[in-house]
Amino acid sequence: MIAAVNGPAAGGGLALALASDVRFASPEAYFVASFINIGLSAGELGTSYLLPRLVGLSRAAEILYTGRKVHAEEAERIGLVNRVVAREKLMEDALALAGAMLGKNAGGLQLTKRVLDRNLGAPSLEAAVELENRNQTMLVFSGDFFRLIQAFAKGNEKQ
Image 1 (tube, rainbow, N blue to C red):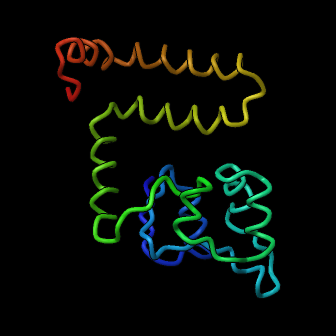
Image 2: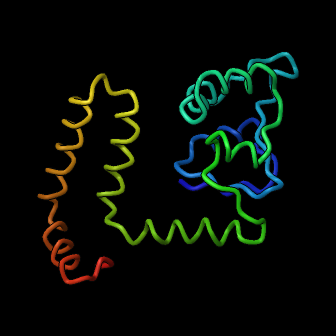
């Protein structure tokens, strides 16, 4: 999932952005876990799980404990967003990335997403490599692999 944030991302909007695989933001965007400011917990809809994985535990704690706004420039610097893009190019860039992803094998993308999610908490490098090897084996025998490798060898990656 690709998030293109061009204004405030608060509450559910913040959670949706955090749950995205890639986040782009316009310079006007900001991110805030504001429920802490009205006496509730800042951790909702997975923010306490997702935010530390993007920015680290200490930064996430400061953001969640204070309920302060994280503006686009800082969000990019700390890894909360992949890049800040001019507002008028935000959707264009997000759609270009989506187009690049759509040009890839759907099974390969699905298993790459799954292995990234699972291996973030892998108990060891060995366990991570084992899952990667399993996925590669599944894809080799999926039926698309031989057609795709032949197209790649011919210089036509978009087959």
